[in-house]
Structures are given as structure tokens and as C-alpha cells.
Image 1 (cartoon, one colour):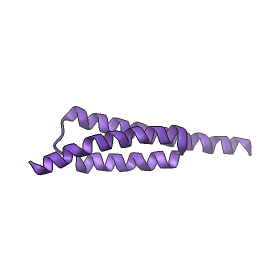
Image 2 (cartoon, rainbow, N blue to C red):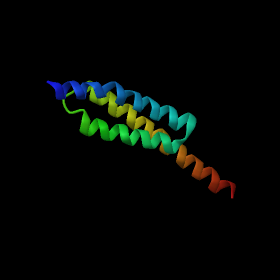
Image 3 (tube, rainbow, N blue to C red):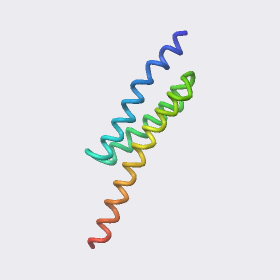
Length: 85
């Protein structure tokens, strides 16, 4: 009972990490956004075992979106730097 309560307590943290990854990827720094997204994905994979499928999908979706936005921003930066030279 206590272990499932601890796992359910991680759900809001992982959701906020996924949202933070999206915000960091777009507004602050793409490296920070990708790092937060990876931590959120690892936490979701290993920490959220006994949660409902829809909650797990939301956590993975937010973290994956944050990682994809960070990677897209990084690739755009590399492309623009290559074209300018």
C-alpha cells in the first residue's frame, strides 16, 4: 500500500517535469529541456509502475514532446550556424 502511494505521489512531479521540459526547450535552453525530459522519461519508466495507462501515456507524451522540441531547436541552431558560414 505504501509503495503504490509513493508511486502515485510521483505523478504530479513527472507531469510538471514534462511541462518544464517543454518550456525549457522553447524558452530557456534546449539542453536543459532535453535533460529534464530524459529524467522525466526515466522516472516514468521505472518509477510509475502501478499507475493507470492514461496517466502513464500523459507522462510519456509530455516528456517526449519536451525532448523532441529541444532536439529540434538544437538541430535548427546547428543548421543556421552551418548556413551562415
